[in-house]
Length: 407
Image 1 (cartoon, one colour):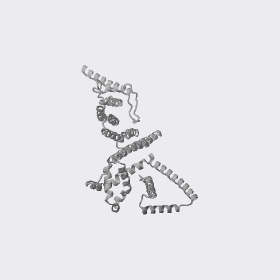
Image 2 (image 1 turned 60 degrees about the horizontal axis):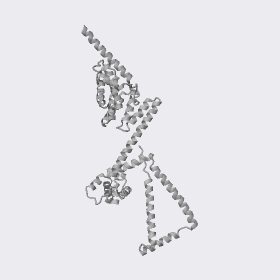
Image 3 (image 1 turned 45 degrees about the vertical axis):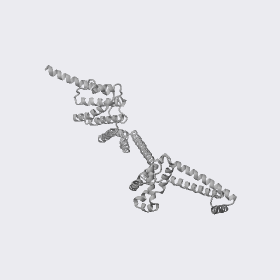
Image 4 (image 1 turned 30 degrees about the vertical axis):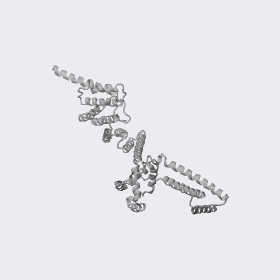
């Protein structure tokens, strides 16, 4: 990534501030001399210098022209500064400001940490008031940023020359200011984290939108590539992995689909909320679907294990509508796999999977989740078909047993 150049806005504002400071001091000296507040020799010297300056000024006509040009120039400079400040704080420049703040906290701090801690072990003569309650401390911290050597000088060893110039006062000042800015530093760290999360969310959304644009053109492979890029933005984002896993199935990439579903499960385990439990159970159900596609008894038996785990997770969450629907899907697939194995067992009865399936899927139209465009359909119609299969298998078992008894 190309490194952004530092903004010149702070330097311009610093230069203007110094000009105003010099003008204020000069005006104060002239005012004091005219009122004879300074020593006699000083008053005479200042007034003579003032008369010489006035005498060197042009005549009235030239002075008016000079003032007109100066006014236009001042207005132009003020407008430019206003636009410059506006540009600096535009949203598009947020990454630059974040990077500058990050560099300020990271590069020079890590390089100087050993010296700062060594000073901290000693008794500092005076620690300023907390920056939140003292504007003087805020001013000292701002000024310290301009007088402190560049991190590149520190890393290349040129810091030793600068240290001789600024003496140990600079290091001690840095340590004092750090001790006085704990609250502000914590707020800045929080703001940086929040900004990073927001940027990640927006980046993920951008990749998802790009992916769906390719879907609209029928380019599923390119769409899946965009969804994959969305998953790389954040290692803790379930949303992007949910979509990417769905389109992995559309591109017949079962290996990657299982990997993404496994990542969803790992992320969901770290957050013990209702939504995270649902995400984990849903990932287990989708893993079972992929395994069952092998279409053999061994695969059916293997697929039952994640479904049992999903059932245990969701059974305590049936008060939540989405958890109830997901549990209905899980029971549907569980009963269907038992039918494929021709071992329905005791699926029917109170609190049994078949009974719960009918209860939870009652009135639900056949559907697939938007995040699973190529996934299996679930609904009341499929639940009814599964119920009929179970009934037929139970009937066959009963008929076979009766024939053996009669014989």
